[in-house]
Length: 231
Image (cartoon, rainbow, N blue to C red; front, side, top):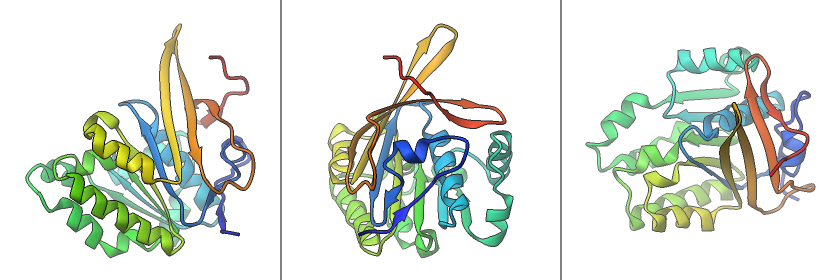
């Protein structure tokens, strides 16, 4: 039985809804539009994994280190101890994303950065904005087989993707090669935005997996799983 990487925290039941955690060696793809909640989910998973003594590298195209720390504390995810004890490695790549336009070897550099891949779980948010300028079919295959090699060592790789940043052919390569495939949907409902996690595929789950999980993000509370999902 593969080790399960648990991300349970007492105040929400996201871990229970998502099969009780990610089995070791899983490739997880989380796909959503701009503002769809990819970073919020990444932050919640990262904190929950750390709370359960699972080491995480979070590569972010979204925020500086200071911005990330402020954001986590605003959601009441106190991560300073994990940053200090090395359970969490946070790597902001905002400057790199700007530079990536001119770098066709970006994917090769990503694969060569060994320290990124030393932790149990590696989250790359958002992969598509990192690779959109340098990716083609061949490089996608290389990258996927690189991630699969890490999976073979028991590591969990979580990739967030904004589908309109990649060609349909390349996006579908990531979808078809992953073990867990989640899409995030959001639609306006009155003055609020209704957000839903759709679980399209979940291989090797320890427990039952919810197909549709409603959620919202609240200041000082973090991610809240909605009890009833209204379609």
